[in-house]
Image (tube, rainbow, N blue to C red; front, side, top):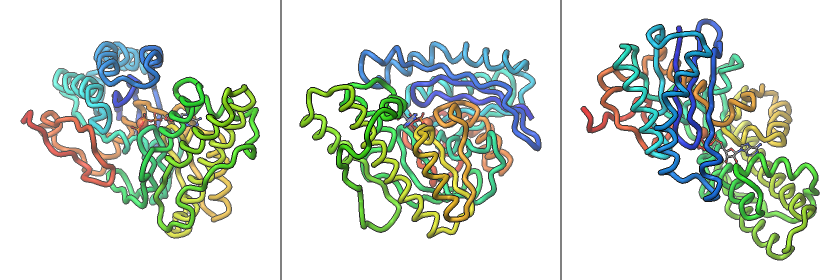
Length: 349
Ligand code: ATP
Ligand code: FE
């Protein structure tokens, strides 16, 4: 089956075509970023993002179809992000998907963006169910038990900032570029992670929640004390922060792996692109006798291939809403992954 994916929940306009049979084949995956548009403002501006998505979604979609060598009428399913995210952008992409579905008669499946991240390892791997998922992105940091598409149980979440948000804010206050995660990883390569003492968030606290605001504050204080920062100071600070953040994520994940007895660990979301985190998680899984799977770097950050896969899996599981409900659906700015699989129908009905 040919499945089309559309993603527009943050600052990447993306479209992809998958061929799904026994294996998953990625025929195309186009991701158009907006970094230049937001750079002058030091972060993503929702209104600018929405306009950029509306401006480009048709071109990105056409490019994905062209690269895959298929026409829209040959598609079997159209999957589009319906939330959570910056609502203007979500509406631009989802409304385009509705139009495409109406024009072609190809069924539409609304997809939770987090479902996309949660299933993203399945783009390149056979992932045995159930698995423990560390979902670490720009807006979320969660440990979940994934029993299938639309079947997630949340074990823990952040009590303040998301992991990616912490990388981004820390990078910003150190004067590094956006997005912050890759910048911190790059600069940290030349740094001494032992130089600055960092707190251990939620140390001794039971459960699987995360907290990153203390690390961010520690970096700010250290940066103020060491100001003006030399390149070496920045590298050491980035390395110290990265090591502490990875240690925090890894220790909570290790505890969850033990408690659940899960035999497979999966990491997903933009922060799962971090080399140090990937290496640590692999060690933890090995020590616990569990398998470890993580998407390739370009499928950790936002893309439409993961949305297409999630849409297909929801459809196979019988969890996709009817076409009538899909077309009447109002996109959702907030939509927890462990909530209902098929979102509530909006006012458009
Ligand atoms: P959400 O999925 O929660 O809605 P999002 O879609 O904006 O948020 P993603 O695209 O999954 O988030 O991930 C982007 C985040 O990943 C950014 O915060 C970015 O700094 C972080 N990130 C990307 N690469 C790395 C890296 N190598 N190390 C650490 N963080 C990284
Ligand atoms: Fe995302």
